[in-house]
Amino acid sequence: MSDFTYANLILAKNTEIAKAHLEKGAYLLDYDRWACVLNPNNTQAVALSDKIPVLYYAHAEDHGMEFAILQHGKTVSSFCVYWEQKTTDKLFSNINAENFGLFDFSQAEISQIKALLSPQNAADSEDIFSMVQELILMLGLEELEFVAWDYVTGNEEHYAVIAKG
Image 1 (cartoon, rainbow, N blue to C red):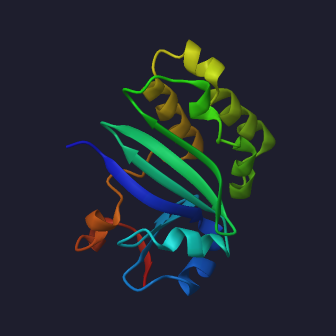
Image 2 (cartoon, rainbow, N blue to C red; image 1 turned 60 degrees about the vertical axis):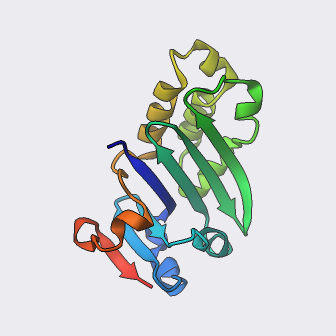
Image 3 (cartoon, rainbow, N blue to C red; image 1 turned 45 degrees about the vertical axis):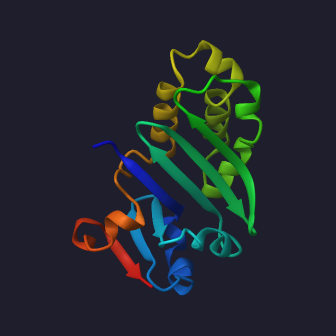
């Protein structure tokens, strides 16, 4: 079975704010640097982004990966790729890597993200899958496997649940 992860991530230092705004049935999970907010219809992200920045992250290991950074109810950065799709400049047009600063990434780390997620690097890269795996490591998301509301519901003992709405 391949990994499928679908989560809204916030910095762990913002868990108290998230706890105060959890929707009924939502979970808040601990992942070191990150805290993960899960709810059945993924409606939590936009509302929560009015209070704190949110990194929406989806990784279907066999199909592709996407992320979006939300702030003040709006998407300020995004990237979506499917493994079989051809890489074009348009694929990289909405990344706005400087917005990773909202999650305490340093200028040096942001420069690395920019260099990694660029049309030039994609052209030189062996494949887009390897590039995405490197991004996952850079963001510290490698431990998020099989994290989605459907997986956690009924299996709470397997996850580091901080709070439940």
